[in-house]
Length: 457
Image 1 (cartoon, one colour):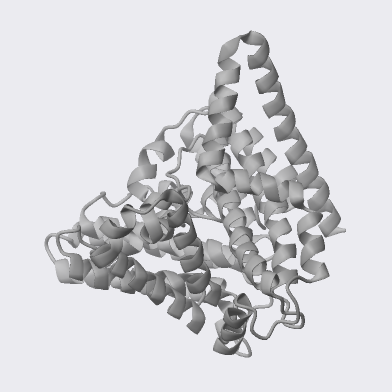
Image 2 (image 1 turned 45 degrees about the horizontal axis):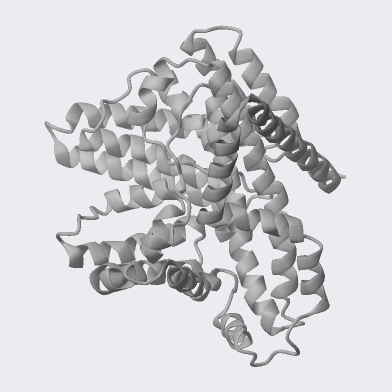
């Protein structure tokens, strides 16, 4: 089950939200969340529940053992922490990257939440790791740890929330109208990103990167659409995750930041999946700017680990290592020089560098990647623009314009500030702006539901 399944939107989520409001105690809310989360996890795959419970109790037991011996026997605590990491890595590979076991007895017909299992594994290991580091105490109440581990709020797009940030909210949280309103709005707009905007760019990507009809503009627009598709899918699911959490009374850290050209390529890499990059950086002991060389080496290794975390494939490893290397070069040599460039030049720098580096994720071989690179400058292309790409762009021009307003930070800020100023003029304008936002939110939800129903039909 995922956030964009109709059975989740009209079944499991509202049922969980309503049932959790029947009692104010956090223990009751946790119980409802655990039950509904296990249904979310194991929908159509009951065997998954057994493994989830088994791994969860192992995490709990190892955490208790590590907590009791981290001072008296640090070597044994380290070994147990490493074993926990190995167990969670195995779970991630089995359920999240099961394509590695195709044709073997471990091969599964249906993989359970490929990216979600990555977050589950990292979150579970981060708990034991934080106990080992002395950041938190080992949790004695297994039901509190269970709430943290299996919550469906955290499954589809992160973030990697640390137990120390969640412990207080698990034991005591309040659901009020402000959280409900903010949560539902964030969830619906996130749904719009994931369902509507992502699909628009999927159409352009499919038409532009069609190997049978290579065109110059198709190569450019297709790869830009590739980035936009996954940007809106990822940020949409992240927004839904935070929205669902607010409805449940949780406040989560932000898992991505808006793209800011002033932060250069380093900022772009860190802004995408902030909590995952942060965890791997901490795990590797990424130092402050004082140890630049060591930091550069850690950045490269971190890039490779994040790439493999997404997909255990050679092109993902190469792209991850390349991104880490460029971050290292930027921090060592180019940061001060690039900071002086105009904002427009920085945007061009980010776009070109991102296309060249992350474009490798789209192709399974160097041949396909090289063919695309040649197409960017018109080599090997049939013509400049295909009918399929033109139609995909023109048919979705309104949603493309909306997407640009969301991605381009100056435009987004201008719209937001303009709406706030208009609302501040008098009550009539305030009412008009509020009504427009409400109608817009309702329209997005209705269109998303119709779109999802059409896909399911």
